[in-house]
Length: 366
Length: 211
Image (cartoon, rainbow over all chains, first blue to last red):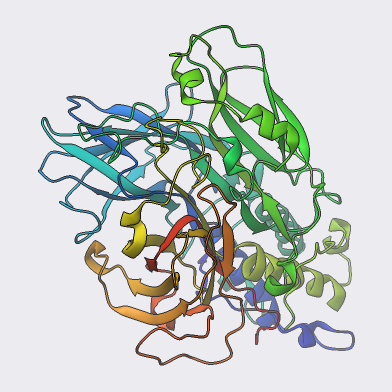
């Protein structure tokens, strides 16, 4: 009994399942195939995408890895255990590298190091690494940290970083599979063939499978500030990467992304926001800002998590995509303009004033 | 079949129990629910924010803002830059739409952006060109260095398999050959007098698919 799937996926002909037509095993078999395809491959596009302009993100003379960026990475299921990381970077001499640590909490961390081989900007090729989970993790998301190490006397420049989960190959593993508390039952295609009964099990499991897949997260927005940037070049030429979201970002720092209905019908379908708040001195009380039509208040430093509902209106480009598209990111409001109007001197404290700032923002939807 | 974008109410579980007659409506609801997942929700997408140097015109590092304003400037070096945005496509990535935010150099004659798609064999930026793509001409320029970014979009309509050997001057989505769907792809972007601040990549949703 093989839990196989076909790629590209096969669909069920809706004309074959209307009244007065015999339900053929072809349709049932295709449902099982399509369900397995969705579990194995759904959401394996980019879960992390961020880029920096030329001479922006640099690190020099570091004998050890300097922790510079953090993102929240949602898990697709406990069976998806390979996170592929693709790094576009360059270093004029050998010895530049980056370390990626995926932290599930409780001491469950997984690491990969990537050696940088390009010697000038987009010279020849990018570098890759794979984080392989060696034990089953059933968390909804984990924190990915990027550290950068430069060779003595030289600099590393990061141009972009992206990541994606590997698809599960066909056939899927046997037995029940999980995404946090939701179960998925792989469908044995041979059991759905001709001359075999259409069992009650198939219908019940298929309902559970669809509900589980509806809860599978998609990354709608991803951004991290850069900490610990350092450059031996003059500051006009390098090393002034943004650490915080600023008021000038509000007009265009967002993505337009489809969000699929069901949030009102199914209370388990939500949008989650992960906000990394930092403050380098002084006493922190709270930081509030408007996000996706709601005001959220971060009451602690570090990562804050929020569950958001769908309140905003669709963007006009919905008609071009044929989907319900929404603006996903910090809202362009007067409140946010006030909250994000801070200077570097209020981040690093050289003005003797410390203000809290947003050093990372991940928005995950369904 | 029509691919639903809306929430599909699933049949009641008791309708699938032993002794129940399986109706076409039950199977149809399951089929629509799965099609919404495979051909709609799980279409690929990537959202790149392009952060810029926060070095200001008065030798100040603001450390805030990833954009081109907050008094940061479009530097002259950006006039002919190349970007490579990597995109993990899906088996359904036949047409790929691109949306980007940008600022054109103040006073430039003809700011432009060219988009093409390449394979990433051997992790190379200069892999085989899969689609020579298109060129955006006469993009907006900024009145001030701190003006709000502009947006440009390829659209989602492409009714043919392109065979151009240089960028089309009519903007359109990129076409991914069937052999390359599901692979890691390089969306190569070349700019003239333009600085990018965001680049977004989408699999195009198809309203109707032949089963």
